[in-house]
Image 1 (spheres, rainbow, N blue to C red):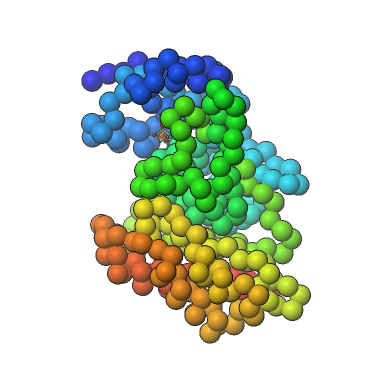
Image 2 (cartoon, rainbow, N blue to C red):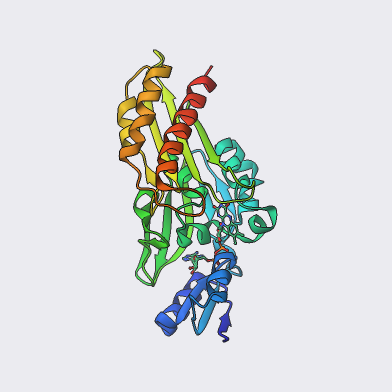
Length: 286
Ligand SMILES: Cc1cc2nc3c(=O)[nH]c(=O)nc-3n(C[C@H](O)[C@H](O)[C@H](O)COP(=O)(O)OP(=O)(O)OC[C@H]3O[C@@H](n4cnc5c(N)ncnc54)[C@H](O)[C@@H]3O)c2cc1C
């Protein structure tokens, strides 16, 4: 089986090719996910549209207000970016925890988000950071909050006529602490069994002024742990309060059995790793 490979140099050219070939076209960036699906016969497009030559889709820029990561920036570029490290060291660590250097050199952030495997690392961290994606189509551009991007396993709210062009991460409010913990009981380059991203900011009196918690590998999509967030809002987060809040994660997740563990095991690990993530933020503020 073969396909015609196209290399547009602008987003407009890519959109034009997508319109021309319709359901028979498939976008690729780093092709790490695409190649596996193609080899298994799960994808058989007649036309593959490579995005890596589109200069405007790459790069990373930072302003006082936000970090903007181009859709074709690779995981390795993001991991090594001084702008990303200044913006949020936990984001750097998140990208450094993806697979191996070889995969990170090839895989792009746009491809990661569009692929929508619920065990991937960047989505929960970007959700906790309040990120949004920019999607372009012939009708113009729209932004989609990460909370609204993931619909099901391997399914996003991107339309088939849209190209994801950039990821925007707003500047963190001063004093915000952030962490990403990936539970890897098998090998260091595996997908997470459970992962937890969290951000927290405190008032001068030590109360929680703002908290966001998101988990990966705990259901068909990465998920915000709103029950945990609600239990901590305005509280003085001592160890007992954190343990109680972490236990509430059970209401937010819907894990399933897979090669990395049973649903019940993942429920236990979600509670344990949520508690650890929250404790690390409280202890880290000193
Ligand atoms: C061996 C291996 C180990 C891995 N381990 C991890 C891990 O530990 N943690 C983790 O987070 N991930 C892991 N991954 C997944 C990896 O992160 C994704 O495969 C990768 O990010 C996809 O990016 P890509 O650029 O290669 O996408 P591609 O394979 O090119 O595309 C993936 C999908 O996204 C679509 N797409 C790509 N770019 C765009 C765009 N700009 N707009 C719209 N749609 C687009 C494509 O049409 C395709 O359906 C692993 C992958 C492999 C192969």
